[in-house]
Image (cartoon, rainbow, N blue to C red; front, side, top):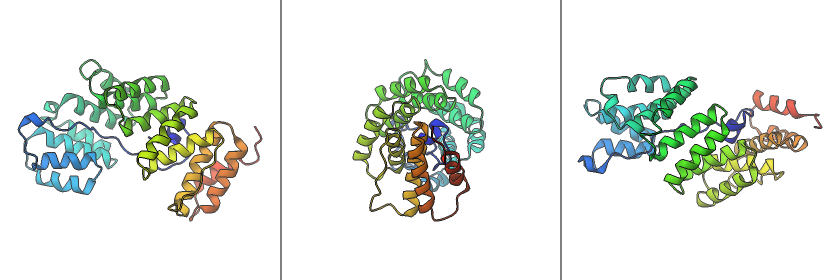
Length: 278
């Protein structure tokens, strides 16, 4: 998730679309070379073209798990209506209930039906109480509905069930940012970035949290003008969230100077803070 999305700040790079993360049960007799297993592995690694290749081999496969994987791929590609249509097909209800419920809830959330998404997910609280992805999905839905205490509780439950999961930790950190706890969020994000220096979403969230604390980002050798501008923009949004208006104005002005192409949304953000002294 993105810190800018969490706080309702201006335009920012879109957050990754979520997917169900459970592996097919190894006791089900599916061979390791089965396209079903390979497609699932590719989906979890966000290797979408590879996942599509394996799913194409499963076009005539009667197993309902293949239907679920196609729905999850549609979600990752930003096509929630297609995912919902796939999950409504005969047989989809015989797939793993927690995983299918999570995919359906995320699809409902993405099409703007947050109340239905919440009801669908909450109905599985008892049955899926030991499933970390269920709680991560619950956290994302609560977060989208601006129920930050609910999001924090759900993400902490997910992390208790699946410790040291970087995706869940990032989501928890973003929720901490939304709750105003930039200090704790920055500590978590710093450790995540130490473990995975190329994680751009974590880096941008850390820029946001640090700017809330009054700390400006430092340009890295690998940052081209576009990435550096995006980092400055995220930091500007963080400073604005913490009402550090002068810092926000400075960061957004520098983001404009480094942005290769004209960006109306970025100009709007700058105009909203320029000249203010609160």
